[in-house]
Image (cartoon, rainbow, N blue to C red; front, side, top):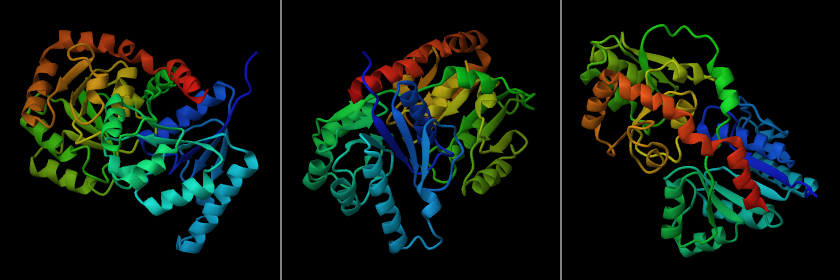
Length: 363
């Protein structure tokens, strides 16, 4: 006899423009399929990605000033919601930099729920106020601290000496991606693609543009398409113009459906300073497109099998990246072989497999 489902609240900043946000939407679908009652709780009023379950939009309560009184109002609204709906589990995707704020939440909002802290980046300072005994004691009370890569899990265990740490892979909805990837685009030329936010210099798009300019690709008529937006885009455009390659570097902006770009690319490039488990690599591979990525803390080495589904390069080695761009373009046989292996290489990220792992963790 199947056990009755849990009541699960997923707390996330928004449902738009990011890998964590897309993953939160996918998890809501997984939990719904498993028979749990799901609530998506957004802190801001940004809802772009699809989800399952009931939306609780705290952003609708946010005023222009976002003053202390308004924050307290949303704090109390969230606490009342958890109590009223008798929530069993909360998956907390937020950044957690303020110890006092986290102490208040743990003791006055979360005391009767099983709390799962989500950690999605190697930058632990985004998710833990500091590496001291107070923080350790606070986070040790959680049901678990869940990570999207084994490397992050191992670092938390080492840096914080915490035992309640778990690892579950990022989910990939292959059927959904295949359907969206089939949509028509105006991409007629040959190109490579990279994607990510341009609000902060984590993806190192400036160095990618410089490396692309030094490679053989512009002379071969192979464009570089960049998906994403943010305040640094203007600087990147100026750099492309200064290098006289503005004709070949195409800024496509944020794409709600990036999958046709991945599907039709020769390959996808990643050269981040750090990651968690980069969705851009997973989504490219799910489209059958191989990847060229520099290793970084963490993620690429857990997803890429060198010369099987792409090329894995040394950390922050842009000379190696230039060589790889040239070589992967020339070697059609290797590139096609990697493309043929792409989807199968990440089957353990399927909704079914990730769902099994979550069901085991929740029970």
